[in-house]
Amino acid sequence: MRIIQLLSLLTCLLSQYACSPKNEAIITINPNNEISNNFIGNGVQWDAYPHASTENSDWGKLMTEDKWQMNYERLDYMQPKLLRVVYQANWRYLVGFDKANNPIVNFDTPEVEALEKILSYAQKNNMTVLLGEWGTPFHVHDVAANLGDKFSGANDPKWIDIIIESLQYFIIDKGYTCIKYYNLVNEPNGTWASTNGNFKEWSEGAQLLANKIRETGLAEYVSVAGPDAVTLHDNPDSEYTGIEWVDECAKQLDADMGIYEVHDYTSTESLQNGEFAKFNSRAAKYPLEKGKQIIFGELGCHTGKPENKARIEQDPHAGIDSQIDIFDYSYGIDMADAAIQAMNIGYSGTAAWALDDAMHTDGDLGDKNKLKRWGMWNSLGTELCNNPQEEEMRPWFYTWSLMCRYFPAGSSILKTEELDIDGVRLTAGISGDDLSIALVNTSETEQTFTIAIPNNTTFQRFLYIDGERSLDEDGFPKAIETNIKANKQITIQIPANSFVLYTSLDF
Image (cartoon, rainbow, N blue to C red):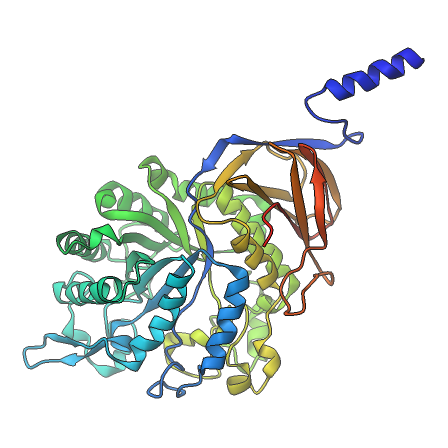
C-alpha cells in the first residue's frame, strides 16, 4: 500500500499540472493562442452635455468645474481606453449660413470649449476617441429650426467639408491626436436616423468623407468608422437588414473603412442562452475576414420586460428611452457578461452606453423629466432631481470599470478551452508579463475549477456579488484578496450570480 501511495504522489508531481480536487474541471490559458491582439480596450460613450454645458444651453451652465472634476476622478479610476463622443455640428461649431446658403463655422465658441474638456482628458490619458455626429444637421435633431433644406443629406459635400474643417481644427490645430476614428451618422440603418436606412446615401457620404480625409492629409491621424448600424434592427424602408449593413459595408466600402463599428442592445436572456455571442460573431464575419478590427460603439442591455416600462413610469425624471436596471446589482453582471463574450468572439473594444444620465434627454429636446437613464451616475442629480444621491456611482460601475482598467490597450485576448460549466464564462488578456482573467457565473450554484496559466503569477482578486462589493475610501472597487501566489495554476471558486476578476496588474 505504501508503494502504491508513493507512485501516486510521484505521478502527480510529474504531471503537467498539479493535482486538482476530485471532479474539478481544468481550463488552460495559452499565450500563443490569440483571439485578437492589439486590443483597443473597453470604455464608454461620454458626450458633452448639450443641455447643460454652457450659458446658452437649455438648462444653463449646470456642468460646473466641480461637476467635470467629479467625472474626471471617476474616469481616472476606470481608465477607459475607448471613448465614443457624438454631437451635432449645429450644437458646437456650425453657427449659421451666408447669403449663398454656405455654412459658417466658428470653433471659438463656449460649446466647442465644452467638447474640448472631453477631448483634452482623452488626449492626456492616451484614449482612443471615436468622434461623430448624430446626423445631417437639422434632419434628425433641431428639426424645428426649419433648416433641413440647408443640407441635402449625409452625402452633401457641404456637410462633409465642414466635418473636415472640424477634424483639421481638433487634430491639427489643437493636437487632439486621440481622435482616431470618425463615424458619419448615428445608427444610419435606423428608422430614427437622418438617413432612415438609406444605405446609398450613407455610403456615398462615407466615401466622400474618406476621400477628403485622404486628400487633406488627415489619413495619418484619423479614418472612417462604419457602419455604426444597430445590427438587431431591420428597417422596413432599408434594402438591407441590420446585419447586412455590416456585410455590405465590408463588401462595398472596405477600402474606406479604418475600423468596423456596430451597436447592440441585448437582453439578459440572449446573453445567458448564447444568442448574443452567436449573432454578433456572425456580424463580425466579413470585417474579420477583411483583416480589420471591429468594435461596439454602443452596447447596452435592455430587458424589454414590462417591469422596466412600469419603473420608467414610476420615475418622474426618466424618459421612455431608459433602462432602470442600471440601479440594480444585476446590471453589473449583464454588462460584464456582454463584454466577456464580445472579447471572446474577436471584438477589439466596447463603449458602454452610457456614462451619465445628464448627457441626453428623449429626442434631445431638453425635457428635465425625460432623461435617458442609462448612466453610471447622474452628474446633475441635485440640480435636476433634487437628489444628491443620484450623483453616486451605481453598482454596474464596479464591474465595467474593472473590465476597462485591467484589460489595457495593446493587450492580447487569449483563447481558452471551453468550460462545460453551466452559466460560467471567462475571458483572459495578457499585457506584457501581466495577466487578467474576468469571469461571470450566472447560475444559481457556486462553481469550482482550475485554470492552468502560462507562468507563476501573483494575483489580486475582486468580487462583485449582491451585497458584497469591497470599496476603498473613495468608493472605488477594492480587491478582497491580494498577493495570491499561483504556481502555474489557480483554483477558482466563483459564487452564484457573481463576477470575479483576477489580475497581476498592480495599480
